[in-house]
Length: 304
Image (cartoon, rainbow, N blue to C red; front, side, top):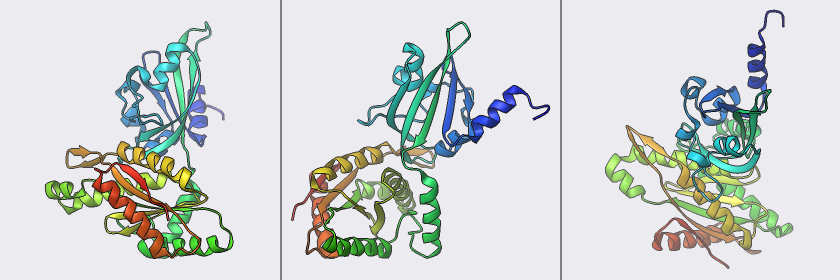
């Protein structure tokens, strides 16, 4: 460590942490952005240092999809009242994908006890490294849809059939969800098919990041996703669907200077004892169509 200054040492320690760390001075200007923050957000250090946290470039939102910007920004709130915060939120990556994060803030005080700034630690709710490693293996085996980066039709069908077979032996409830993106026809009409493809990719990645490691997401049809929620019943699935809808709405698609967000229509059903894959999907699609007919941006649960 000879010759290593204290600031360099602190930076090395912060960069080695497995969580994202952002610190601001007393005026709310970003003065520290570690490698973890770069990894989670997609924003490099040079993109962020010197910016004001109130610019809300990460576009934090609480679990109710209420923006945490301006004075509601967690860092500003901590500097205002001196309290540590611990909350669940979502942020928007540089790529436009919305991800769920755990956020913790701490006040930074000088030797005299006066407020000098605040630090925020944030990490994705689902640790991505093991999931990404598994995903890479599936991609090599031809199980991943190239456009969206999620499971392809054959693989998600195999998971559904396996879940139904297991359900006949061990009747642990699970649910199937069919999801479509509202307004794709208008996007195609205005920007073309490539813009639709970009929208499908961003929404698919947002949904995947919002699911648990033991859930499955695949591209069922060209413009339809299928989700398998393990250990989930009818009384729980509506809340999950509403959360997925909020996450999808927080995502942004950037296309040649234009930016837009979308909503999704969801149909859901709980697996039944004598279900086939076709039967379960048919009920979920029925709910999805009802959601679309009602104006979209909602979940409809169909019972047996």
